[in-house]
Length: 92
Image (cartoon, rainbow, N blue to C red; front, side):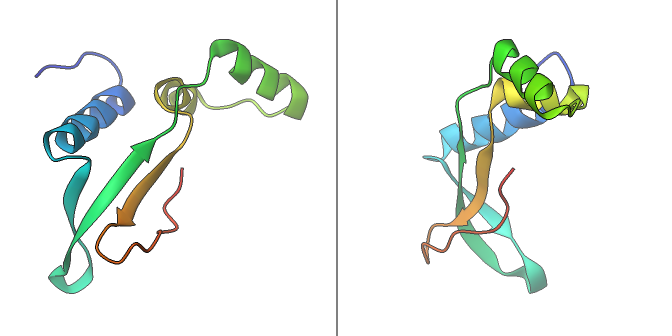
């Protein structure tokens, strides 16, 4: 599968494909080689209007690559441990 576009789009497309092929669960190797089963979930994309509104209201200008990420998924939960139902702190 060839995905055109930015590295953000290619990386997320690859991760989503792996997740789809494995029932939204992948194996993750942590410290000292420990393997765990983890789940990743993605929020719905942000619209251009939402991003413009955010920048206008806060005065913050988001980097283009982060805007591209938000247009694919307006946040996500990464690497939630399935086996122990522990939620990680890796939230984008």
